Picture 1: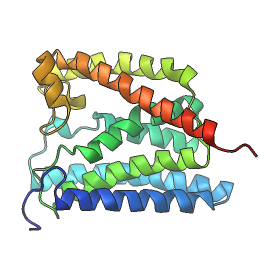
Picture 2: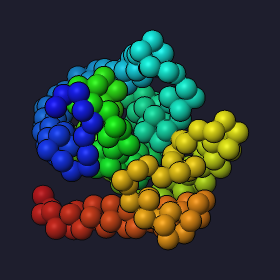
Picture 3: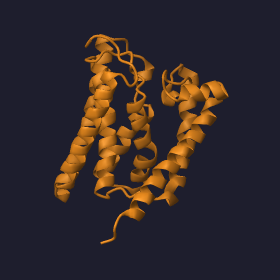
Picture 4: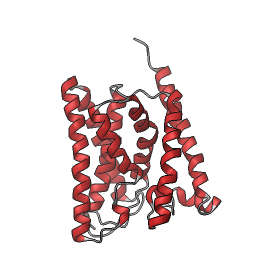
Length: 234
C-alpha cells in the first residue's frame, strides 16, 4: 500500500488531514506560550525550513525524476513561501493580510484537493507536499491565534490588487512555456475547478475561479467577524 497512489478522501488522504489538524493545533499552542524573542526565532526557523525544503525538492526531482519548469516556485503556495519569509523577519500588515486572504485558503484547498494523488504514500514529493502545505496553514493559524495577524476586510483591495497584478503574469508564463501555475491552463484533476471548467469551458473557468474566490472571502471574513462578535469582551 505504501507504493501505490491514493485517492481523494480515501483512508490515506483522511489520515493526512487528521495529521494536518493535529500538527496545526500543536504549532498554535506551542507558539502561544513563547516569548516575543522566541516567537521571532520560530518564525525565522519556519521560513528557512520552507527554503531548504524547496531546494531539496528540486534536487530530488532533478536527480530521481525529470525536472521541468512546473517545478519552479511559481505556484500560489510557493509564493506563500516568499511571503512567509518576509513576514517572519518583518511582520508587515500588508503581508499578513495576504497570508490570511490569499495563501491560507490556497493551502487549505491544496490539502483538501491535492494535485499529487498520483504519488505513492511514502513518495518523497507526496510527503513534502503535505508537510509544505501543513506548514503554510500552521504558520498563518499561529499568527491568527495570537493576533499577530488581524484580518481587516477594509484591506481587501490589497489582496485584489495583488491577484490582479500577479495572475496575468502567471497566465502569460503558462502560455509561453506550457506550464500550469495557479492551474490557469487546466484544472487539477478531482478539484472543484473541474466543475467550473465544465460550466464555463477553458479558459472561461478562470472567471469561475474569481467568483469562487469572492465566495471564499465572504466565508473567511464573515466567519472571522462572527467569531469576534460572539467572543466575550474582557
